[in-house]
Length: 273
Image (cartoon, rainbow, N blue to C red):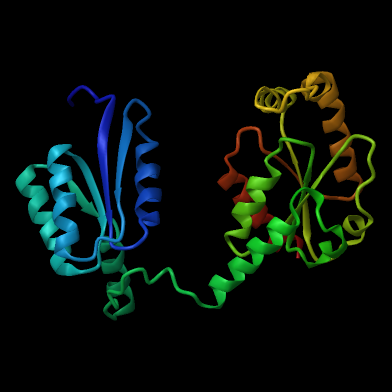
């Protein structure tokens, strides 16, 4: 095996938004920490005129080529030019489409951007996003029972980004801050429909994140108590006590990505319904 490269060009060609490619490319690249992927994303490539400059750019910076192009003629052009340039290329969707066709016994429709449809599910996600933004950080507590999920936790436990990620999956999510000695909203303790989950992290992790926030805060903000480890430990103890008292499950987000935290929450929903 040759010596590993410390960086490489990753070309992502899509006839749609490129989201599928970006996710697949990053998931694969993450397995090779010694080499950094330099991403080149080319979305909405749907004809030869749009494709030719992309292939020229690849020729100027050879690397790995991933593509999702449903038009067979265009995908054949990509394959041929990549062979001529001596660069590896893979159609990310084609093997999966072939598998589906074989199993289902029916041809695919070959429709560009078929996953991006403004149907009932799409508008459900928009509705969930609107609800989640309106109910961020304890806002509008009067209708908490309309939420699918409510996240509670002390400051800097990733409540807001996790809420937004869940909302993108169509899950109406509210989040409520836990403040030492401050009672929770009455509507939270009486809510019967939502799954309520407590988010916690280690004292060190929260102190580190809070310290970074203090560094970027406005002049005059006093952060000594906000980042004090003893104070944070008390806040976490209070949060755990509240969750135990109300039988709310707790997820430690210290070593979890937002996606992993959201997956753990989604996994809890059917168990508690």
